[in-house]
Length: 477
Image 1 (cartoon, rainbow, N blue to C red):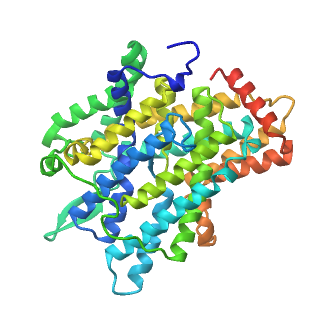
Image 2 (spheres, rainbow, N blue to C red; image 1 turned 120 degrees about the horizontal axis):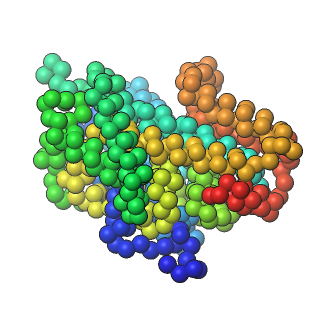
Image 3 (cartoon, rainbow, N blue to C red; image 1 turned 90 degrees about the vertical axis):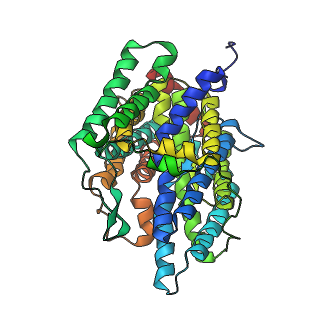
């Protein structure tokens, strides 16, 4: 690598690139297919239709990731970003489905086409407003970004712990019918032991391995867990790796645009989905700033605009290819910190792998067969690294002469933890606000920005950039 090449732009050897990209895919896979599974279940789609949604999601994930990581025509932040369906869209889409069912004469496909219409419109909306949202850097000095990144890590930890506990539901035959029921083996000791095993493997490789093997510690840990899961069999069915779906899955499948028909555009669903995209864009701003700190590449207003435009383009791709709104996946931010590999081409390699999985359902089923408990140990490492990065940034903040900064961090973190500690805290608030209030990342961002403006003033974009650079140097990021 030449002295002029930034680590973000480093092109790694193909074998290393593929392994690191696969590591990113394994980390995000469970979250990537979760939303299609939830929505297809709520709509009552048959197995073939459900398979179409999953394959379409993998394909769209890959396409959106390539746009974000490589950048095309002023779109894409060109950082190691993986794209996936945002969970912020689940509640509104479930609301649309519930409204369709309450009206009588429910039909799954027309309801799905209404959702796709709102997704495409929301993606276009995000693309158009991205320049406005992208010019907010002055509101994000290190005391704000460090706080937000810390809360992002703490919020993600819930996902990692949930993986270690096991799936919330399982599919079983009940009275001769296939039904989804609560998982009776959630929190079983064998599942927790599997997560601990993967964690210990990752820690051992991190300490004793060198070079490339150390960089793929998470991948090796997941593979080791999958091997153990494939060997335990009937002795521990809770964590056994089943290959039944792999055997049934075809080798090749084609995802066609607008496969279910032309989307329908209705005003109310479009407005709801546009609000979702505003929430997504605020969260993405925090993710981009976090990655900028972790990779050592300054993220300016133009970069934010390109990244947020890619969220919009990814969402349009999602609507056209029979899936849902896309965002920068926070699950993969921690992996950058764990591996120290900052190349955006690693994310691009992950995008290519996702596209291949979208066309080869059997491979997708093989990846999906890895028990979620295996990911639990990896999640604790990765999401903890995000929290640690936020703390490191805060280590470069002036708390001695500007004691008000302590109040900013303390109160913002407190608000950010409310949805984690007390999920029903906002149950009596208007439903229109719950989309914002139920996200700890959004709460922490709003409170930190407002309190920083109250105590320290708005400042200027140049001043904020200088503070970010200074804090990054002091935090040795």
